[in-house]
Image (cartoon, rainbow, N blue to C red; front, side):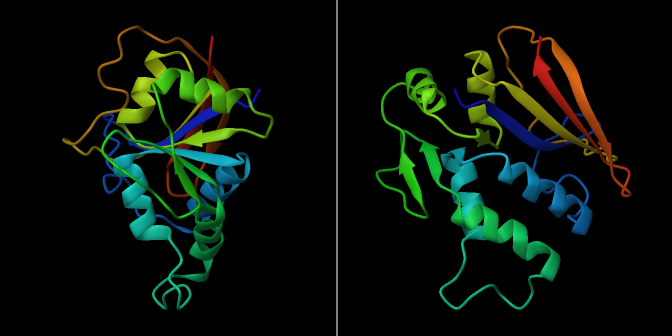
Length: 184
């Protein structure tokens, strides 16, 4: 059974908007590239899929000149990864992706039942639904030393409390800290 891992940047006040934390640097991009390498497929909701595609899909002309060399390994990892998209509004997807069909819980359980290294999920709304269903096997929060004061908050609206056990902690030169947990 493949584990489902949820990873996201989050500010000290719980904001998980993609622009709320520190700008990415070489160290954080190495971390995120390694996180993607732990999975053999990615799982996105519509919003995150479209945002990631607009930022990280390789153009036919190659990576743009503005992209720093330290960003390329992450870009290549996310671009080539197989993707599953949970959406009730999209009719089709591409970019190495397929739409999940049917109810979310059974569809994701079927993905988890397949052999492989793991599934990685990012975003805000989809992970909250998956957490409510008890389907997330590992949480990785990269806590940014920032107070955003507004924006979407981490796992807002969970029906039940989820107790977590700390597995690992990684500190970055920027002051960010990656905390890896599993449900108790």
